Image (tube, rainbow, N blue to C red; front, side, top):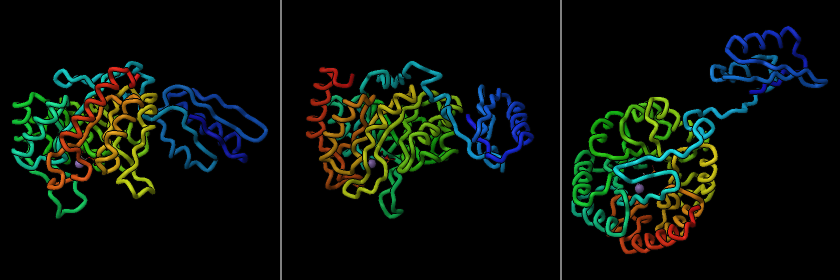
Length: 336
Ligand code: PEP
Ligand code: MN
């Protein structure tokens, strides 16, 4: 942290701030120039509240040098984290494919899709039982019945399950059924939910918030990790921009940037990224080339009848084609 003092700050005021900072456990290196007086802080600055320092009338600005996330930072954990979900490895150069419907709608619907994605080579089954819908009048998900169907689909296909949890009240129940618990974009900064996820023994799939910066995204991962759960998988699923042709804009740069900043795996959701099935294959290819650790893709055998997100769902034959393309790319090591 670097503190730039105001030009008219007196030597006494500078000394007072320096003493305060030292009492908080760091070493302060002052540099006095013709125009600026600067205090350079070395050591653990985690106990320093930058906003309090900024509030001092003698302070011009406070510049942060270190990232505010620690447990999620590659700086303190240089090797990639690899999350193992019943043998499916996510992170460290493995590309895992999760696929399934947006929502669990019925036994027939889920089993049809689960068997199709398994046949095409998906390694995990996705499906929402609790749905975050913009309108309270839209289908809200099957709840516990949906979780039971997911369990049944797992018994039939052997595919581990990823499903979203929206509240702390339903967390205990979902934990019994899910192999990977999703925290959706809208809940990325639901701090009580993040803390509960941090006390879970299940890995967490954390999706980037609609308007979240990469730093805010990593700080949400930090919330989970600071409670003890280190198995966090990040998911870029498109962010809000001025573009209206697509539902969101896929921030593909989040993949290499997060890989620089963090050791956590980062996967791409090309379905929610644009809201259009026709862009799912090209964006999946882009994700693999950018180095993503996996994809989560919505598939529906009757998208025109889907109760949510039909327009972005691939039909099973299109998903099968995509899987062939993905396997060819991985054989050519295009993700390296
Ligand atoms: C979903 O996965 O169906 C979903 C609602 O995702 P997001 O939170 O990214 O919108
Ligand atoms: Mn969806």
